[in-house]
Structures are given as structure tokens and as C-alpha cells.
Length: 120
Image (cartoon, rainbow, N blue to C red; front, side):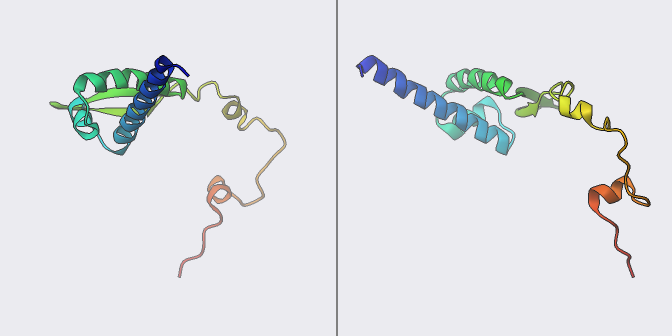
């Protein structure tokens, strides 16, 4: 292993830790770039570079990092892509099985949650 490879490996590890830290903090509570920089002990510019990588990682997993503005305040949130489930073959198949009927006297809520108990 050359020193160049060792440096690259160490840098990747630190970068990976930064991205994991960003993900953890954003999932736990609302944060801005400044609050993330304080929490992680890095500069705002480093947070900005980490957020770019985090966006790419989240996109691969079907999520996105968005900036949310509420009044004069803003923060980051992680959201699931809205179109993620539109073309899911399993969800398209729901209700397509023919000849299957619920037992007599059982409604949809009973099938999902169980029969309601009689109250006294």
C-alpha cells in the first residue's frame, strides 16, 4: 500500500463519517448548515461539501434532502421521493386477485385490525 492510497483511504473514511454524521443529525432534528457545522466541529464549507455527497447517497436510496423554509427560519429535512411507489408492481397488483372474498360479515377494518370487542 502506497502513502497515496493510505491518504485517499483515510480521507474517504473521514468523508464517510461526515456524511453519516450529517444524516444522523438531520434525521434527529431540524438543522441548518451553521448548526450542523457546530455539532460536527467542521466549517460551513465542509458541511456544504458533505451535503452534496449526502444528496447523492439519498437519491440512490429513493430519498431526497430538501431545504424547508417556515416563516423566516429554514432547515434541512430528508424526505422520501413522492414518485417512488407509483410504479411498484406489488402495489399495482393489490386488489387484482379475483375470486377472493372476505368472510361473510367481516369488513375491511375487521380484516386489518381484528374484530372489535364488545364494550360494557
